[in-house]
Length: 279
Image (cartoon, rainbow, N blue to C red; front, side, top):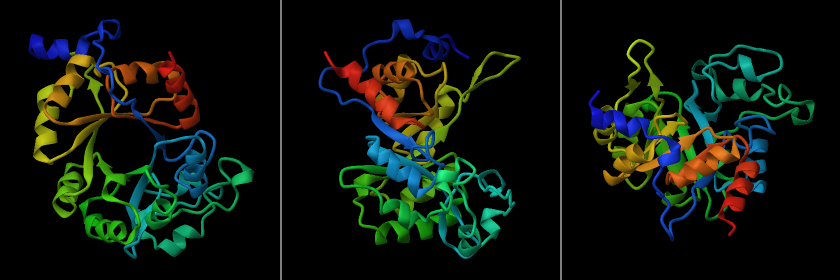
């Protein structure tokens, strides 16, 4: 790794430039799978609670079912999130089979009876002026069905952002729905033997360009420095971060100029950022 690239990753937080210049907006608070610290993740209960807690946006995970419906759930199988531990493959199951499962009781009995919602049901919870980040967990084959569901919703294009780790999903989403923003999800890791952080800045830039992404959405990592993030933004891309439940860290990320911060605890992070903004 070149010395210039290394410096982009290793600038300490204490040396951060003030990326949030006067007049710039604070980052959006995005509820990760809804207000998932308090309510069962990816359920209507969690999304509705997120709005009550002051979230600017919700983030949910979506799969295409066997009968070509779009359902909201994170895992490829159902075992983790139903009390009976029934292990269904989401992509090989029908919506009716999946909706038969109670995906609330595992969290607490007060959530008993919560079902996997469809994308349409989740989008219907989004108030005017708020956003939804749609994370595609399956492949690009979902895109035609995703496009139809979005067109049938009452949301405006600026209220919807597509996100995915899969480059093919982002590229195909931009081709099919160029009016929507799409962000590529990326996790950084430091290799044990070499100490090198992967992907490198050059690899990140190449990936963003190749998939026509509007932004980079990355896991919270020490590599998220002002130097690196400013370079990403200078190239025309937004920067987003997940999953942050510590108000102090959220404040640091806000100073780094993040466009959004995704959290399991929207009320806590919203209050922390509001306190920071108060003179």
